[in-house]
Length: 166
Image (cartoon, rainbow, N blue to C red; front, top):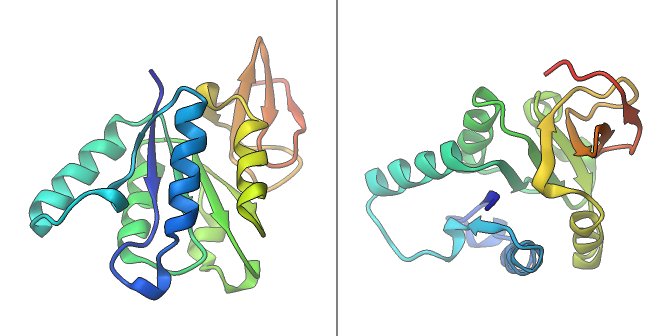
């Protein structure tokens, strides 16, 4: 079964995106994916959280992040996923210029703007999430493609990519 790691701010209440996380978990599970969402786990010691979350990023097939608000933990999870060449779907709400340039310039990701949770659902249901790979698109800034039969399609712009250079 495909394993998804859901990353979003947890500590700062004003930065949390609980509705996004709840909605994403519901949609992903409805699609038959297994989701690890630390946002909904109980209290634990920092060392345990670190080991648990690093382990789950390592074990996942891809990462979904909510990056509208800065979070050191989310940044660490993103960097680990990049180093492990895991596809990252980065959702953000608001102005892209407010996002960190490190996030915007990162490899292995696609930035997905949303205004409502319906936008998130449409995006997640529109793609073959069981078959995501890290693949730079020649037409946009995305680095995530979906494998459909023998073709690759950019998750960011939908452009067909005909040669894999993973």
